[in-house]
Length: 350
Image (tube, rainbow, N blue to C red; front, side):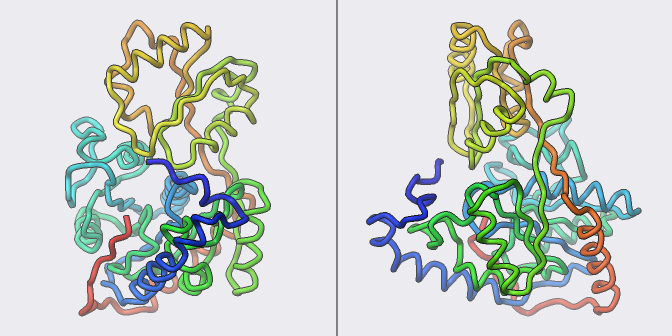
């Protein structure tokens, strides 16, 4: 599914204005749900979410935080809903036995970087992770899900797109009004440059929230391979233009682009068409690590030379600020006694 183009137009379209009353109701209900009290997991919980529907860079952020936590002697588990997968969980993702149809493409990708639990019931997933040795839970998504108490709520913002037209679903991409969500967020992370992200950062600073900055980039080796390389860009992610921008910034020549819907389930016919087009254009096929979780089983061995996977990682502009936030999580968790809520109503947020 692709987000409608009018969501990202700063000047609100007629359709956006017509849908605004519905969006106002949806946003109010989501904000009220976010204020509910959740279950205390008994170990610290960091939530990496976003204000909008669609991609902003949550998964690379969760991977980066898990790496930092591991380096600090903690045992982080990443907790995900497993969007697109059939397993309700809780289950720990094992790349040797699971595939994207079972646990979801993002969870399968995450499991290559950190121990990952899929659970539609977040408190059950947190308890499962704790039983298997987790000292820290990193939730990938779930800012609007109140079922778990969070010691740190970090909202990720894409610098290029920000919050789009600033309206709530379905009139715009916001899940709830920005001011309401900022009041229930501890810090924001703006990934990449852009006026749209700068406007959100200014609103966060006005609300007294710390603003972190970061950037996504491929590894040096992959960047070297992309420089001057003609490619067919193939992706099934929330913001395919971000992938195209990464390729261009690395110096690739994009001869054609195929942007499938987010979490697209590739078929053998898709792969055959992609390979034929790349051969006709005399170029490589560049795709994301997330898409590769589904393409790997379908891609012919004889055509492996034509496929280039482009993983990206997050680099924080000020790592010391991130460390300070992580220190605060540990202090808060030590100071607060564990408790369980009487109200564990889960949200419809994914």
